[in-house]
Length: 167
Image (tube, rainbow, N blue to C red; front, side, top):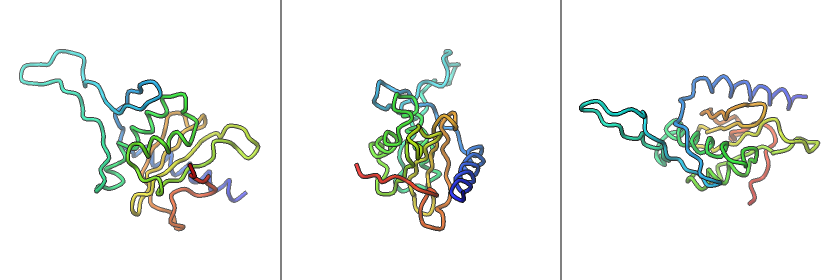
């Protein structure tokens, strides 16, 4: 009973904080690989003296803060969400590792419920100093949600049971 209440509280906090999160540019998926490139900002012809250059794709900022890395984390999350692997926690972990995030700093919840049904939502995180980049996806979530939250008292990012990242 308490675990359910804590999980609900966690999802509520993430939902509230998501309203404050900056919006990252939408990535362009390419098959099953992940592309984080963005297109031009406008389709019209440029006016005199102005250039129509593409917005730079977000990148990993190794010496930056969690907030500095949120646009990149969100872009990786959105790119996986756009694939057939969108409800696989492992797909998000693998993509974040490929994007340069530290696998040993990650957590992920199970893809299935305790009775074997697909999970209503999956959470995954990367600890970044005293903060966490947290993503949540799934049928109960709608579009992916990505936020920066403080590390919890236990020194982790996610509350409750997570699955081992042993691959």
